[in-house]
Image (tube, rainbow, N blue to C red; front, side, top):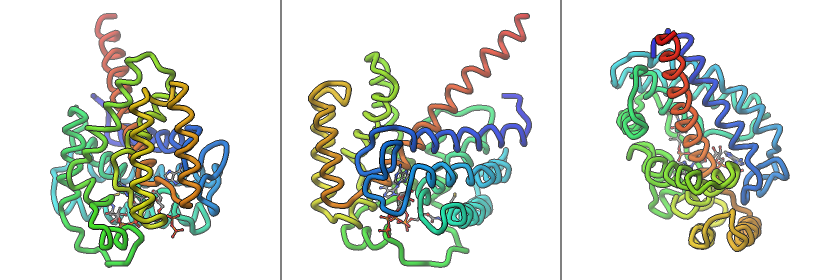
Length: 291
Ligand SMILES: CC(C)(COP(=O)(O)OP(=O)(O)OC[C@H]1O[C@@H](n2cnc3c(N)ncnc32)[C@H](O[C@H]2O[C@H](COP(=O)(O)OP(=O)(O)OP(=O)(O)O)[C@@H](O)[C@H]2O)[C@@H]1O)[C@@H](O)C(=O)NCCC(=O)NCCS
Ligand SMILES: Nc1ncnc2[nH]cnc12
C-alpha cells in the first residue's frame, strides 16, 4: 500500500472512529442509541456515543502503531491489551463513567492490529482470522473482574465477546458482511442495507448485553423476531419495516439492548470502509502510474 507507519495508523484510526460514528448515526435501531432516541439506555445519549467514538482515536492509532509490521506474538497481544484498557479508561472519562464502547474497543482494536501487522494486504477473512489468533493469546496482565458479560456467560453458557473474537469473528464474516453486500446487490438504499446487517446479527448473536438485562427469554424473542424480518425480505419491505417496529417494542419491554450486535455492526462497517479505501488507493496509484 506504500504508506508509512504513522500515516497508515492514522488512516486506520480514522476509519475505526468513522465506523463507530456511522453505527451511532444509523436510525432507527431497536433498543439502541440512535439519532431519534436512546432506546433502552437511560444513561446514554447520541452525543455521548459521538464523544466516546471521538475520544477513541488515539487508542486505535496507538494499537496500529504498536502492531505495524509486527509478528503475531504474546508480546503484541499484551501490548495492545494495555492500550485497549487505557482506551476503556479514556472512554469512561469522555462519557462521565458510562460504558458506551467497551465491546467495540475490543473488536475494533483486534481488527486494527491485524491489519497493521500486514499492511500490504490480506483478505477480510484473513484479517478476521488473524485477529482471532491474536485474541487467543492470554493477557497475563489482566486483573480478573466480574463483568456483565462473564455473569451472562456463566449463567447461560454462551461465548460472549471474547469467544466471538477467539473464533475469528464468525458473525462478521458469515453474517454481517454477507447481509450488507447482498442487500447492496439488491439495490436497497444504504441505510436499509446497514439495518438489515444489524438485524441479521440480532437473529444470530448470543448477545451478553441482552442476556444480562432481559435473560434467555429476551434473547430468544429477539432472535426470532429478527429472523422474521429477514424472512420477510428485510426492512426495505413493508412487512419487514413493520416487524422492525415490533422488535423495538420488544427490546423496550425487556429493557434490553443488542449492544454486542451494535459493536459487531461497527466492526463490519470498519472492514467495509477499509476494503473501499484499499480499492480507492489502488485505483489512485494506477492512475498515477498511467499518467
Ligand atoms: C473480552 C472483553 C470484551 C471483556 O468481555 P466480558 O464479556 O468480560 O465483558 P463485558 O464487560 O460484559 O463486555 C463485553 C461487551 O462486548 C459486547 N458483546 C456482548 N455480547 C457480545 C457478543 N456475543 N459478541 C461480541 N460482542 C459482544 C458488549 O458491548 C456492548 O455493550 C456495552 C454495554 O454493556 P454493559 O456495560 O453490560 O451495559 P448495560 O446493559 O448498559 O449495563 P448496566 O448499566 O445494566 O450495568 C457497550 O459498551 C457495547 O460496547 C458487551 O458489553 C474485553 O473488554 C477485554 O478483555 N478487554 C481488555 C483489554 C484488551 O485485551 N483489549 C484488546 C485489544 S483492544
Ligand atoms: N448505538 C448503541 N447504543 C447502545 N449501546 C451501544 N454500544 C455500541 N453501540 C451502541
